[in-house]
Length: 405
Image 1: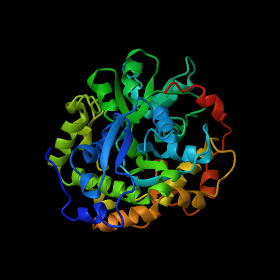
Image 2 (image 1 turned 90 degrees about the vertical axis):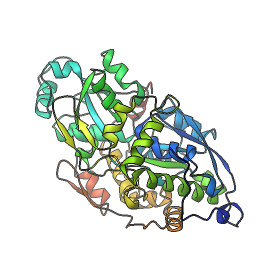
Image 3 (image 1 turned 180 degrees about the vertical axis):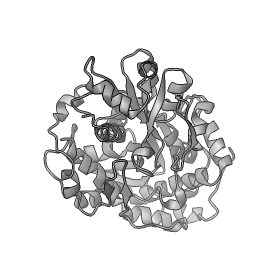
């Protein structure tokens, strides 16, 4: 991959002008996942320097570790799970710390995967899974990556839509994404929900198959976000904007054409970053899917990093959806002021300034979607939406006590 400079950026405006970053060297945290690509590309391929920044990458072993290092100041900004950031902001399972979402990093590209033992037993479709769960016997164990994270929410939503209660009918536990395949092989779990390339690696290593993609649950769903603390934004507002510009520019580069995606896949697959075979990582990055159970398709909603800016806006409605799911599953005892909280956390002004400087349009900050069960979501009435599902009383402190990740 060659060094890149944005043709639309004026480096001097950010290095020598009044908008120069207050802090030039930033420590960025990420997990070894395909959707960490924009941070890796920005940090290593010359996207940060035009904006007066130097980005130092720090690979993390788990989302809990990433959270802790962000909060104690070891990391300046991170590739974050949407729900993790809002969980911290709301004080769910951790100290309450005001947080900031600077931009979306990607949409789509996660998967729910079942163990090869389940496949050999004929549990290869949702109907068979529901029958297996409800017929008695040993309770199945599913792993996700963080109690308030996106993967927990996708797993819970998908199971519930199949008539399987995710808090009663199955056991769930937290496992770092890069350890999911090992847990399948050791038969500690019967399935997992995580980001790529670990679903594809499970297939490649003969340990599992993909039962559902996350985009089949919610087409073009929000996934990872570029996140930091509110304190960081208050202290370094120009730095925050410059960081968004660098990552946004890198995101646009990745999505520009297939060759850029291929070179990005080659870069991030290395042992230094994701440490996974490029032939496991690349196909799903290009939307080429085989599920390990005989089905092959070109996905109409593949992993994407930019989408002409549609991916990167920190939509208010996306943030509110996660809070409504927290309420649904008892992670929140009471309803927050959904819109007010989203407006606190989503840094729309910083994003709009950065996007404008790069000539990227900013769509409306509320968007409409229909999920797999036919329920529409547009953010207009999150209180009623949360109550359209049964509300549960989950002991979140008990659940967090079971999280080795």
